[in-house]
Image (cartoon, rainbow over all chains, first blue to last red; front, side, top):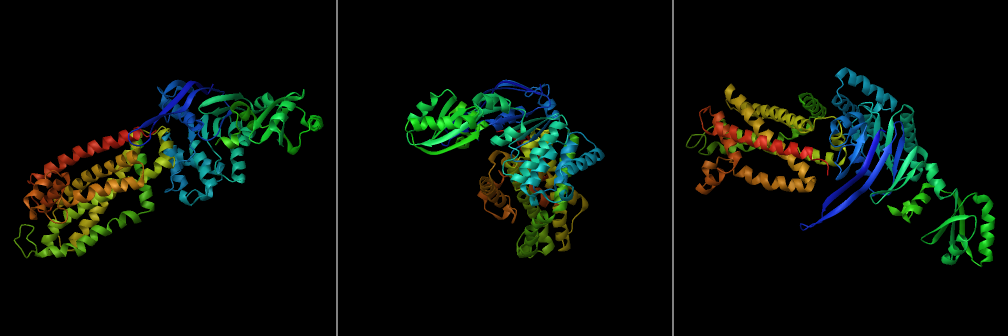
Length: 319
Length: 254
């Protein structure tokens, strides 16, 4: 286990003006177990407590209660030892705008204990890996979002950590840079580095991670591999817009091939396996019931359907 | 610990070396004061002469005040750069790195002191070109006094930056305190020209002593009581404000 957390909680005291304060329970009891070499994702809407969880595991902020061991050391009592074994790339990136990226990289390398010569070698290696050599001496403020993110990643990897935390690594990146970053995460896994990333993108969690937890309101609502979690729902989902939604839900729930139905706003989602073969039967049933369909679509079930099943709302609306 | 402090110092000095425009800009104001304000003082009864003194005589009184102005103003604004770093993830990243946290502050404070000493040398150089005569011990002790004042002011600035974390709020706070402190220290004109109540009020302003000590040093009055008083006062203040800034750094996590 590279990460082992039990009952992590974090309560902030927020100021609400005029001397009033309010307790905000950002994380309300999270257990995590991440294996070595795994790419593990925390998926959830903004404000779910993902960043706070990562910050506790990375020793930035101490948990209000609960314990966690990261790379074999306690995050509170042995924070110094944990810091030697992790890389951490925050959502903000943490690349100094005023200096060339190479300088930030060299400083980070020397802080981990490398000599000047070793730091130069390591920096060149990382610049090469992330195709940054040509822009290494430009002030970071002149770089694009994607270039800065690559510098942030390079800085996070400077000490060859067995574990790296990536907090919302692709937020704000264009599709091309996003795809590149995914490749870089896969390359890390291939080298045996464990990765814990947070994301609110369903496709990112689905495409990239070996296992994930879905977090909502500071609690884990589901855990497993993307495949397992989706199987829990069903293979396919039919989304219907229909005038008499309640009658349609009742009728569909009674069909043997429908595993589950969920009403979400003006849409009704019916979960079923082998959707292509069962769709005609579904249409006939609705027609027999005298229900007029406004629109219908058949899709593969996604992690959003898992999220909907556990929280009653879609991740797209939850932010 | 020492190694990390030196690493941060080297990094910060690198940034100054690549972009030396701003510290030089910071010198425009004091140099303009020397060129365009000091000559106005030649007719005033200062510097031990009843009246009708020379420019060199006026500079003897005026230059230490302008230098303390650089030490105070220049240093109090250095913390602004750190406010942005509380948001752009730089401090967050350093906080979870193996960096010794006080080094993050110490490296910057040392950089500020080095920049300040270089600025002080340039200001004194201009004053000397204008006709000021200084002894070597006076110059060296003045640089030390500047360093102590700057250490206090820049530590205070980082402490404020880490506590307020808002550019607008911080500039209000800094403005609010600097003007009365500067006027009541007799930076422009000696407080001894003013009424009794101002002279009494000035005694509660630590800067008053550093300005007075600076004037005593320039006049080669090395036995003047204001010199040990100013050094002692600013060493204590510097230790307190540095301690505060370092503690604020350790508490960087929300």
